[in-house]
Structure formats: C-alpha cells, structure tokens
Image (cartoon, rainbow, N blue to C red; front, side, top):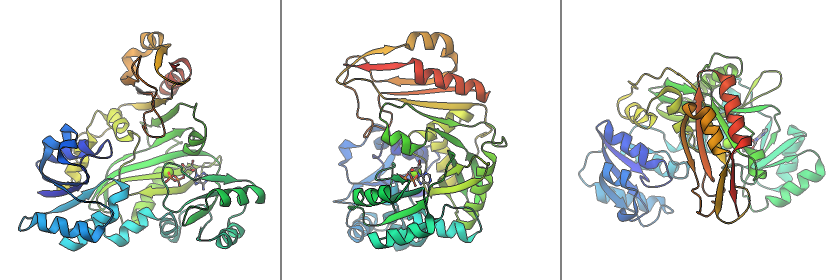
Length: 405
Ligand SMILES: Nc1ncnc2c1ncn2[C@@H]1O[C@H](COP(=O)(O)OP(=O)(O)O)[C@@H](O)[C@H]1O
Ligand SMILES: [Mg+2]
C-alpha cells in the first residue's frame, strides 16, 4: 500500500495521521511545502519519501512535480486531511486514476451552499439559505431567509467573518463588514445547542461514530475571548441529546454518497428537539476532537483512520467507555503566565478523572488563542456518567485561572 499524503508536517495533527499510516504498514510518500528538515520528527520518521513542492498555490504545477517525482512508482491512495488542500488531493487522484473523492465530490464538502442543497434534496432539514456574490443578491437571499439571519463566507472556517443579524440595520452592517468576502452564505439563524457528528467510514459504511457538544457555540466563543471552551464527547449516542443528530448524520452521509475517510458534521438541536444540519467536512474535526474521541474509547483513531483508508476496516474495539470533556483555557491578563490558580485543589478532587492536562508553563508568554487552538491550556476529563463529567468540566472552567501579567 503506497499512500501519497498531502502535507505531513502541517497543520499540527497531521504527523499523527502519517504515523498511523506507517503503523498499519503503508509506505507514506509525503508532499509538503516545508523543507524536509522542518518536518516534525513523528512525520519524518514515518515517511518513506518526501517531496517539497515550490508552492501549493499552483495546482497543475504540483500535479506535474508529483508526477515527475513518482515516475514509475506505484501509488494506491492520495490522502489529505487538511481542508485547504482537498481540491489538490482530488486533482491528484484524478490525474493518477485513483479511488477517493473527486473534485466534484470535494466541492459538496467545501461549499456551504452546494452541501445544503444536496442535503435538502434528500428531504433533510437545513436552515433556509441563499448564496450571495453581491449586496443585491444578499438582500434577495434575506427575503427568503428572514430574521434572525446569519451572514458568513461560503467556504469559511473558524467562525471568521460570521455575523448574526436581527434586523435590517445589523444586516447592512454585516454586509459592510464582509465586503472583502467574495461569496457569502445567508442563512436562517437556528436557535439551540450546537453539536457535531463525526465518523470514520469505509466503503460507504460507518465504522466509527461520535457526537460532541460545543459549549458554548463556536460563534459566541470567537467573539468572547475570556470564555473557556468546552467540547464534550458523549458516551451514549442513543440518549435524547445526540440521537436526532445521529439519525440526521446517517441521512446526510447517504445523501452525499460519502465513501471512505473521516467526516465532521455540525448540527443544531432546536429547543423542540429537532436536528438541523449545519455543515459537513470530509476530514477530521480540528481542535483536538480526535484526541477526545480517542479518550472516549481508549483507542487510536489516527491509526484507525489509516486502517479504514487503506484496508476498509477498523479493527480496534470502539465501544465507548467514557464521556469526555475537553476544556481550552485562555489566560487572563497580558504578558507572561505567572500562576495556575486553583490547579492543586482541582487535581486533588478530580485528579483520577483527568486524562490529560497541558497548561502554558509559569514564566512563558501567554499564547494567542486565535493562532494556537489550545490557547493557554488543554484539559481532558472523563467519566462514564455524563452529569459527573459536566460538573467536573464546569469546575475546570470556573475554578482554574491561568493568570498572566
Ligand atoms: N444558520 C446558523 N444558525 C445559527 N448559528 C450559526 C448558523 N450558521 C453558523 N452559525 C454559527 O457560526 C459558527 C460558524 O459557522 P460554520 O458554518 O460552522 O462555519 P465555520 O465553522 O466553517 O466557520 C457555527 O459554529 C455557529 O456557531
Ligand atoms: Mg463550523
């Protein structure tokens, strides 16, 4: 099994997937834009070969560079788990006649309008929506959507340039603030909780599935720098909270004809208990959610994905043992971290439920949470009981202060 892997060294979690591929016996041929010497050691050690391309910007040129580099070598897969290079990966597959997502399929997973149309055609609930390339089109879309509305980039990420608008004045301001965005999605604002539905699939079957609950909603988090984010992986998918999303997720995967790999869907649960589609990516969730899913079952999905992608199976025991809460801390104050206030007491009370903890060490500069997803701290607690998990998680949110200054 020879796998061309697009960008083994970046972003942060890619080396773990590369290592997973090597662990299941694949020969991994890495393609990146960093010098080989700059690759993290996990990636370097797992690679059979590496090509540094001049730039990922010029896709046809990359295809030619890869073709020359591979000359005569057999390749079975092109894999890419980074959203930004998914079209390029599809182009390489098409050029070399390999299985996996084509460019047309990739578009459905990248373009927030195309995906909603496909999901809607299958009779599943999506927010009312419209695509807008101009102010005029945005106002036309708003006619169908109504207030409250959401304005966001059609291929956005990380809640960037995302605005909630309650009236015409706010809508006007949101359009002014997003003038630099080429194409917008205008949507009905959905009230309620926001959750994920994540899978590893092979041959159109779901081999692993998971639901995580965002607290608070990512948009709120992006606008409120002092809030500690919690992300809770739920153990019991049959429970009332996740169940509608699991059903929706199955419908969405069928509607989109997804075959093999990771998926990451976001959905809303309305106060009436209805699941409404948010978006879906043909890639793993970011923000260390794969780690959290691993902690829920004591498995290694970096390797599990690799096995599914190469051989169509997932042989680890994926039964869920725990609810897992991940908490991201943002330091208070500016400058260097000088205290982990409350930590000792929390560890004394909950230490045996803490699966992992990383805080910006005392004396080091506070991190920029816009650039480093974990911010100034990453804490994972887990417990078979959901209520106990939520209570511990709240304690780490409220009683642990990473203090800078
Ligand atoms: N239709 C909607 N109703 C309510 N909230 C929304 C809606 N669309 C987006 N949001 C909020 O904005 C966030 C970012 O939007 P999303 O479509 O997930 O884009 P991305 O994650 O790619 O930035 C969501 O996580 C959610 O909190
Ligand atoms: Mg999102």
